[in-house]
Image (cartoon, rainbow, N blue to C red; front, side):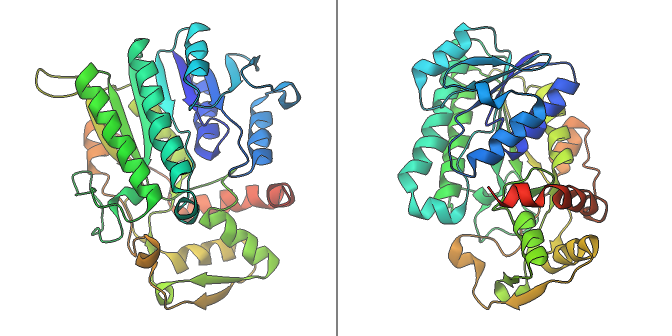
Length: 344
């Protein structure tokens, strides 16, 4: 298939593109390479895929190895998106391009809304106009809000987002459903729960934990250290995306061609336990500072982990990596790339 991966220079996008190429697909990566979340790290990921980053120029279709093409393109530029489709067929879109983070979204709400909502609508509209067979959108567990009861389920009420970032992701989900219903564009949404692994974002929790342990900095944990997360290894997320991609939903007379899945470990992991796993893999202890502040004031859940029964029932897929096995793999990569990752 001809697959367009937006945000393909980002953490999950990089891994998705790598998997799709290994599966024999023709992949076009679209990324604006903004300085949000480190342009240098995005270029390093592209170089890992074999892209000659010195030749990157806005709007230029840069051929990589095999069936890989990279285009520096902003999804807010609708004329630029038209040119992407004019260059060749697109069978499926995997939309990962987004600006992320709870704190940054409080500081730049309009910027987040433009990129995460309008950018998604632009891609949905281009997809329906050009006959895309399947549109796959990656959303976030944060749409559940800080008052949601764990494990979080797809059918939970998610219409009271507790952060600007969560609001933009929920609005994008609604846009996806509307396009699926109105235009019969097959759409799959995958809500990602706390992804980690090699080439992760420098500001992500696993990366900052490893960095702070290495540098001897204290790690502050709010809610007096009680936090539950669903730390999910990136290979499991990518495998879920790959199988969902080949299983587009089918519309009935009254229902949209639409599917929604949680993608997470489905097992509660105390934040302290995850830190201990990184300590063990690094062979160095962490300095923990327990903060009484509630994460709910920042728009975060105290307990966040996924009910994955729908993913398992509908796609016959179960995530396989436990954190005890995957954390050492992440730490091995971190040791090799520490200076490069955190000196950008």
